[in-house]
Length: 114
Image (cartoon, one colour):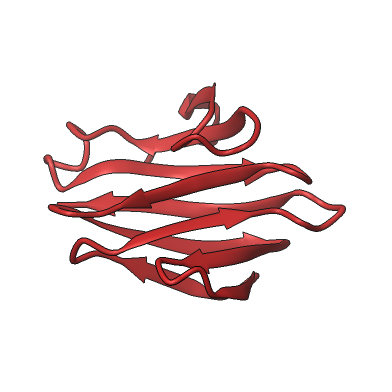
């Protein structure tokens, strides 16, 4: 299956109590992923936007940074730069969040798997 860019569903929403309404370009629906992914979307975080802290109990999440830079905040509140080409994996009940402190948009691919 090939999905054309023109067919991706665009959604704007706040995520996990973070700042701002983020742009999500959904790449696959749960049905198209045969129930393996709850989310498969490119997420754009503009300056000042964030994804609030949230856990992954029965699922895991992969963030792959495509462009820009975010600050990754782990469960213990430690902060680390998260840059283009970096990958983050969160699961096993752990919590995480990210925010854009830069002056440019940051783009990442987010995949939530079961």
